[in-house]
Length: 208
Image 1 (tube, rainbow, N blue to C red):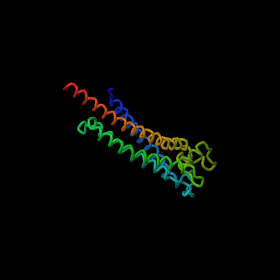
Image 2: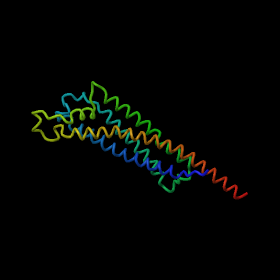
Image 3: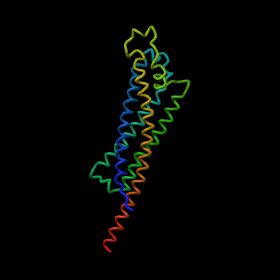
Image 4: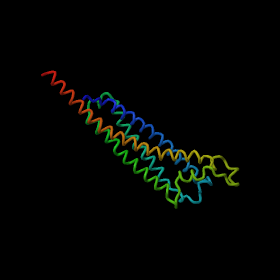
């Protein structure tokens, strides 16, 4: 039975491209929410400037770090897959090792990040950017805040809430895609070896 590993490699390349795209989007959303918090936390009354210790932003920082590492590792594998001089298509074991070497650490990091962020979001004594903005995204401004500038209220809380959720659940999606990519790496390597063996047998039969 002949096995064609090309569709497996194509699927893995597509998934890696999606991982890169999601990582960029997560970097953008998590980075933006953290930047807004850092800029407004000392002046915007909705960010409790007199109580800064109420907020825990380690989850947002972890999401940024996780997305950065995943982007770099997946980008390296994708670049090496597409560079003709490297010729990974004909170096099956090297391709599989590179794929596992990029997806393995990234998947572990994204899983830890999702769990860590989920734990932070469920702590009662602190709020994260996500829990705070989602809690007060529809709250009416206080009377003394009505005359304040738009960046001094909670007008952007709904957008920040959605961005924070996207960064978290997007990281979960990336973890799933990395798991699929690792599975494809193993199956693709086995398919490559099987195909090589079949071609070698056919060649031996023709020569005999």
